[in-house]
Length: 335
Image 1 (cartoon, rainbow, N blue to C red):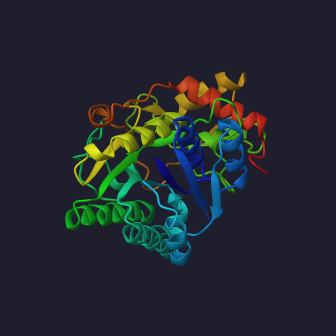
Image 2: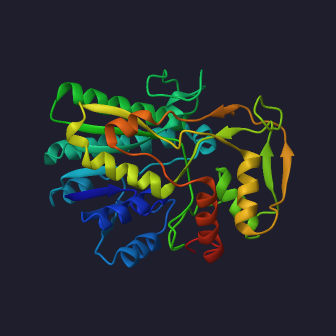
């Protein structure tokens, strides 16, 4: 198939583009590069040994999207969007304009070109404050920050499209906490500024870019008092998108599916596993809880197994080992 990947230079987009190429698909991608590097695209070409056409385009550039869709695509994998929860609280209008209006542009350009097959990068943040674990797709959606609200809004747009036009086939992939990197160490997570997520902060501390890891709270009702999250290797996540693409026609309209490992790890467990991968203790300090942080959340990935034939296979040791290889070989990221 001929596939268009939005946000192709980003963390998850680049890993997924690589898996698409390896599976024999023809891939084109675009990104506005506001939080990514075109070097990721160059390395995907290098790793795959195959061409990957890339353009710098913004989701808000409707004429640019229309021009791109004249090439004709069989499906779109949509990753492009701003993704930092904290920043979304500080700049909610920026997030709504980029993520919601940009996605609206994309969907309109797809419809105009007759392309109605979409895999959307959603998020477990649409669930908001979790009532029970593990979280399945029937859990009420109640996003508690602007980032989560943008994901929820785009899901609703996709659901509305599928109801008004039964030709649409859409997978709404709600994934949990992507970590790790490609085993080659050539592509990985390269956040701009101070990382918002745990694993890149841990690995930047290990490589000397940060003095210590801040652990936000040690008095949660969890085995060691620190927050528990469902971490999923980015390559497993990329393969989940590939599985969704290949089974789109079996879905009914727009369907939401969790992508997670199905178990949780605490912050201290992650630091211990990362220390083992690095070969030395990674320093950390206990800080007061942050407002809005949940004690624990992990996925029920049963539906992904049933609908997509997919399940995560890489454990925490592999996540930490691959992430460390990327960080060690690229201490300043793609810079």
